[in-house]
Amino acid sequence: MSFVHSIAGQTWRFDSLRQLMAKASPARSGDYLAEIAAGSDAERAAAQMALADVPLTRFLHEVLIPYEKDEVTRLIVDTHDAQAFAAVSHLTVGGFRDWLLGDEANEASLRALAPGITPEMAAAVSKIMRVQDLVLVAQKIRVVTRFRNTVGLRGRMSTRLQPNHPTDDPAGIAASVLDGLLYGNGDAMIGINPASDSLSAISELLKMLDGVIQHYGIPTQSCVLTHVTSSIAAIERGVPLDLVFQSIAGTEAANSSFGVSLAVLQEGHEAGLSLKRGTQGNNLMYFETGQGSALSANAHHGVDQQTCEARAYAVARRFDPFLVNTVVGFIGPEYLYNGKQIIRAGLEDHFCGKLMGVPMGCDICYTNHAEADQDDMDMLLTLLGVAGINFIMGIPGSDDVMLNYQTTSFHDALYARKTLGLRPAPEFEDWLARMDILQQQDGQLRLGTGVPPLFGTALARLG
Image (cartoon, rainbow, N blue to C red; front, side):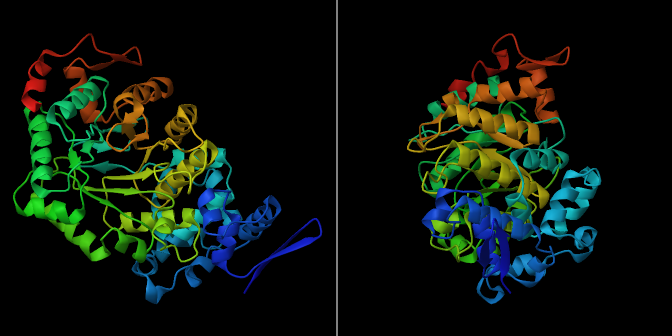
């Protein structure tokens, strides 16, 4: 069954739901690279108007990637909650947008609805929403997770303190950790992208971070962003590991390019749970995603990159993660060409993930060869702060010297918290106050008076 729509005497025909979704996507370079994007603004508008008339139930009967060929499709179909979906099952995509913008869609109803929303439904409705729609609906939704603290509560925004170093030098990592903590960063986690994949190097980094957290009683969690199988091996060796990391994508073939499957992720989840290191809860998976990852692996099956990204959130949702991070501009301008496309993609990802019940954060970032700059990132940071993002990145000077890309800095998080009245995770906020790092005074977030005496030997300890 094809989809047809006419504009100003010209008729547009779309031969499948997959093609309609691709043509309806707001313009981005990755879809042009894949040769599936709309050929003109008129064709895109026709596709969006046709998509608005598609019943949500159509997505339950027409899969975009064959069930028998893709385990992510099987996961989406087999775990769909029909009872949760019943509240909106009578709606079209356009009707769903109207419902989401209305008062009936509130925090409680959206939480109940999440298990009934497939990635394709979320992606479809996002394609016909303006930026303000994506912000308005996302800010209604809270996805709260717990490990050693509580992330995602209304009125709060957490940060991942990212102390990367090109040689994993302990002194360099130590300086970044201390700098970040003194700006109130690190409640989502302290997470290192390691320069070395060796198990011994990864284990030493995990032991170092655990020593700092335990010695100073910091209510946060650590992570070294290594392959899930390396995390499993570290756990088997008795290494103190908090969060289990893995990059994931929205198709079986793309995940295979990362060297993972649903079964491997399940093994990692169970290994993490076996350590019982959480004090507030048991959410312990940390996933990273990004529009374009399936296309870059030639594993997108002709599906547009934004819908592939939403499918990755179905993979994440399966494992009750603590954090999910869309690294929105990291892959490069081949997939998101400029600041406008990066801003739109970040808001789409945040909206789709939260609508599906996933605890979304965003690495608000770009590569140096993209047509983007820090002003674009300031706009996305502010919009995501208003939209209720669970966490962002914090890194010295916004410049990752190990991965060579631009992201958000320690003081960017302080800006967002001060401007929007956002606070750190409650347990971490209490610790910051005890350390005289950050204080709430007259409703305002203020830096403390100086370096806490407790940190006097920290650099020597880490180095």
